[in-house]
Length: 254
Image (cartoon, rainbow, N blue to C red; front, side, top):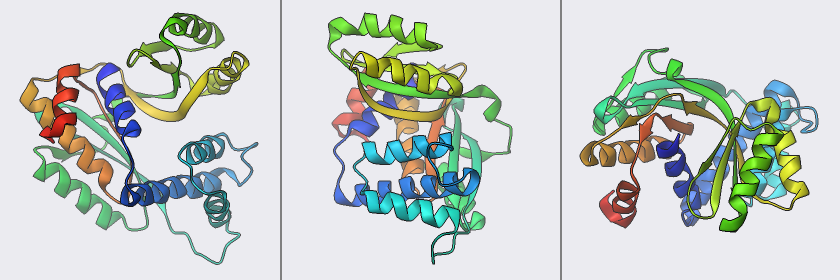
């Protein structure tokens, strides 16, 4: 889990420019729209919507934007919504498996953008089922605490239902669980005043591929370019990256 998880954590921790924040808000709104469209507009009765709204709040999305997205998804808005969910699969440098989720109102545009990005960045788009079998859906709770508290938090999380807990850095843990265990774990962490950075529903690789430096840097570029696409919501891979690669990439090798 470590390589891709650390890429995600570092990416979410980067300073957000106004342009990137606008793009992030658009993607957050899309997730709220589709969640409310599928499961209704009450977060208390719709787990996916509850997670989407919390993620939006964690990223300081204005309440008015959240409410507008819910209304659009439930049809209580003058704005029409024709979005559908799509999943695309492909391979990156070194044979890395890549899985991405998209929300789009134009599948032809989206698949064209995805295929073009794979091709330009040294990968290729694959058929449905080629990669997805290597991933499983998990809840991912990211927390930050003092280093001395991490072992205790790990034990408490496992006792509360976590499948695995991973040290991302000296103060950050990623807690993995079945979707049904997310809220019990969060409630237990809140009882002991643990700072929760984010809660996500992600696709986690069951096995990872370790890459040489050249392939690793190429893969990081590809993952970032895919996630920058307008219709792409999330990108997952089974790549395992070394800390040195993240340092090189963060210093401008991208």
